[in-house]
Amino acid sequence: MKRLAALLFLIASGAHAETVDVKYRGSVDLKSFACQAITKSSFINRVCYDAAEQYMVILLKDTYYHYCELPKSTVDALLSAGSLGSYYNANIKGTGKDGPYDCRTHKVPVYR
Image (cartoon, rainbow, N blue to C red; front, side, top):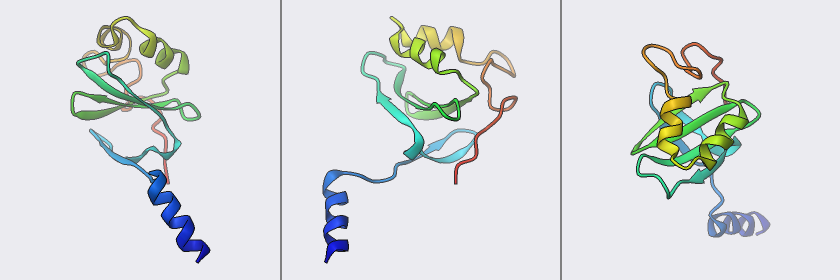
């Protein structure tokens, strides 16, 4: 009976694991991430960041992308920027084959 009550509580409270499909990576479970919905940008819709791994998953329009070895200070600057899209394009997005936080050339965290 206690198990059923606990399960019903979790369902009612909305507590559940969320997994998103990240371009060039596949499924990522967001349980280790702090996520923020973005309402002041027409380009960036959500930012999820795992500070322990310095790993960001970002929803651009309707596609999730990932960035590796990204310092928290950069994520904080992105979230407080007057124009999130301009900040992202100038400081995070890759140029050409590689960017400052491109997961092809930086450590990609392993989630189990």
